[in-house]
Image 1 (cartoon, rainbow, N blue to C red):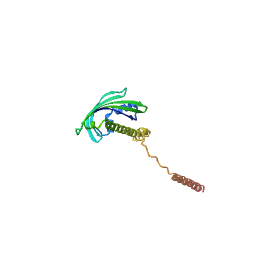
Image 2: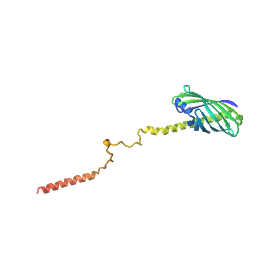
Image 3: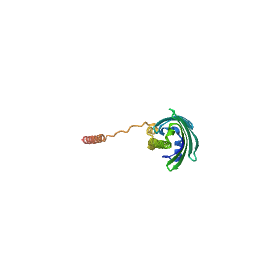
Image 4: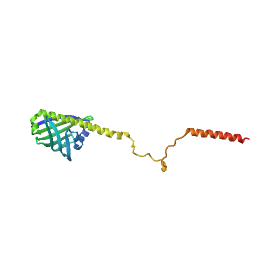
Length: 208
């Protein structure tokens, strides 16, 4: 069965940042439901995807490649092919991704040309479209959560403004720093009073 599926979602990043992020397969693979990345070699990567289509559970293992990318227009093409581990058929896809900037967000449109054989093909286009929409929506949610977590982790260190790990500056002329001494006001007052009384006694006996 051959079919075309359109999907749209948003990424909470400006278009240039979204372009870089979405083409970093190693960074975003964990956001794809059921996906497990085995290796990445430039624009070629391999792995497996677990997916349930109707009553059929499938594990496709295969390879994908980014065959084209146009940074100026923010369009990329990915070609993937895999085979189910239990022999339930094969799946091949050509995905064209187009990004459109929308302020501090980016709209992503995916056009997937899908070719499926075996049991999933018998379930019809409606089921395949529903599964595709569910996977893409979950991916978009996971990606947004990952980006938010990364920003939260980076913000405290950047906003502190002071490096708490550096020792205090040493005093001039190499004099070692000394802790501030606590002044006992009552002790000073007592010594001052004793001094005045002693002076009066000296004056009194001095006149005799």
